[in-house]
Length: 373
Image 1: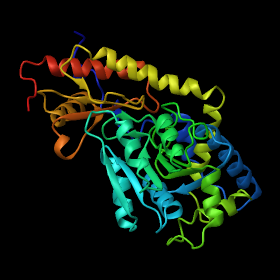
Image 2 (image 1 turned 180 degrees about the vertical axis):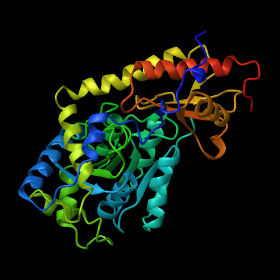
Image 3 (image 1 turned 90 degrees about the vertical axis):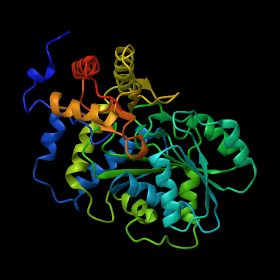
């Protein structure tokens, strides 16, 4: 076994493997440290138009994208406010914390809804989902492309086919999936898709994006009442973005970082970035095969690996990684706190970082007094 990492790690040599915020490339951090330009100029309008074009390529859509200053939850709320009305009844796919977020938003905004539950670690039962939608009670489907709390990647392509079959308006939180997994908004029949800056896009938190297909834009144009929000009125954003501006002051520094990040991404096919996430995930999963962990979901995303810790206490494993090895991973919460840790494969990390984490985990489980539940 290699020498204990705790003896060779300096206090400044931390590595982060959480699902967001993720490690950021140094050149993007440098951009974020610059003085901010005034945004009500033709130059900034040009920047905004470039960003919108780059975002369309990420979502794989020919339609519209709106930029919001706010976290991914802001984009989720804006989507419900603008596209789900009092005459709709939504079906919420709830497989964890972020499926529950959709349900909580519907509750807070007085949207009629039902929940389609997905058991922890199980795949979504497509036949049962279709049966629920075929009943004709629901007009909107709300889902996460990737349930980040458990690592489960849903089959959005097939679910999109089901939604189209029953003329269901299809809203997808793709916050931790776009750039890490294949996502084809137009090709899969997604009406609204959501992304935020601090996942696989690998920027600081603070920006979120709502991509709208043709049916979504038509809903905005044809609505009979304003959404009960000033800040989240997406029609106002679309109108202002035509001239390269946003209706309210955006996170200007983040916009400049986003411009640079999109340029970096689109220098090569998007599939290369997705492959990088896949390779990191596969390397890590193969490397821990002989350790007392199980990969929780049957269909994992490239973005994270959710590890069930068998008879080890997951929260104490996370503490040991932090205190002895300066490696930050994300334990789960609630009833899963002692059972599950999540390892991110997003952001500015390389194979050496992953090897360091694997070595640390190997040392922890090899201890005679290994942490037990």
